[in-house]
Length: 300
Length: 184
Image (tube, rainbow over all chains, first blue to last red; front, side, top):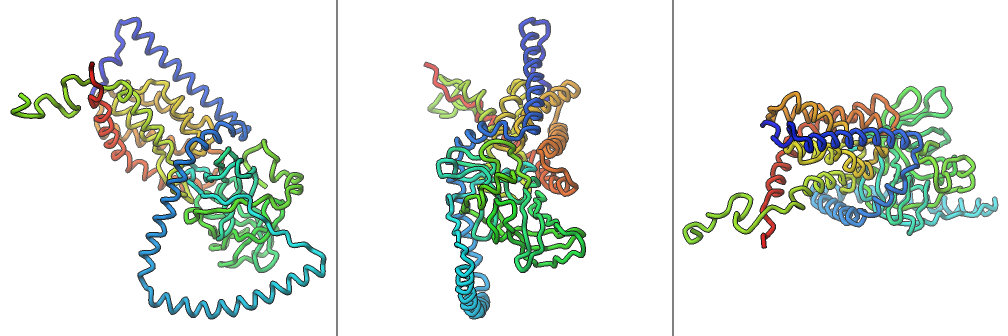
């Protein structure tokens, strides 16, 4: 196929001018793009308003889609459940018997905990969720891992708030719109969460690797005590995330830590809870959660 | 004539009598489809890694290669800006890359005026490779070896998917030229 005749301006002065103007405008577009890119790389928070307004505009459509996703997943699960129903049933009954014993033990421990805390004069601060919302979608073709959430400023969501699902931590709020917001998922390479091993006090940083896994880096270097299958929870340092939210399980040991799998895979998460910042004052002092505006990237 | 064959005065674009193309549809459809492609992040897919091809950019390529001159050369500016609002990339990355790729196609077209499917696919593959690599570079994420191994499946998927997108755009092009407007 040859290029169409109307693209060849020939000796027509007007057509030549039109082609020339097109080139000038396109060149201006390139320059403008380069300038915008430089600004947004140097000052990541500059165009937040523009993005959040755009997000608010399409979030109702996305929300409808998210409901469909939840529904369809349940259908698949329902079909899959018919396979191996008998053996599954037996295994579950066995598990249930063990779990009942454990539950009784846990209850005893809880009561003891309450008693000890009362002795120490500590008050239990129950984190009341700010909002319960749906994870609508994510930047599935960009190298950044940012999710879209169906709650915004109108629901009380603010920057820096942790987002978690019943399975564990999902991420933190990056930008807030009126009724939608953007979530920095844990697997984004800019995300860093202070964690500790659930069983003891081995502390580490969990960095996103943007391929769906996390990289755990030990704070105290030396002999690597992590073993495969160790579960890591938030340590509470930094003041952003309350301690004890499950984050990841180690799958592969490296020299300075481990590669870990996320416990709350965002792909299987539909309803998430936005929690308030655990220690707002401490977080503000440490700069982990700048009050409203500022750097959009959030390294701790 | 109609009694012999009811479709005598029709062609694939509709009736040839008393009907004409709508300029809104003919010029607006490429813009609308590319913008819809840019909205893929709002699809109910939450990917742990960059997986989906950059649909907005692929639709832009397909329209541009199918119908040279339909999209103006400066179309990269508004379309890239719209893509940036949703893609998660820093604002400006889409504006720059969309504009540059329209320029690049212009140059390629001047060099190879006679094009066919294979050349179009080769062009699109080269553009997609450069686009995905540069987009990862511009994303502001820390660049590691892992990053590059992660984008390879996305790149392969995009290249394999391009002929299907081009085919879909060809069907949309037929829709674009339907005679829908009644001449009074």
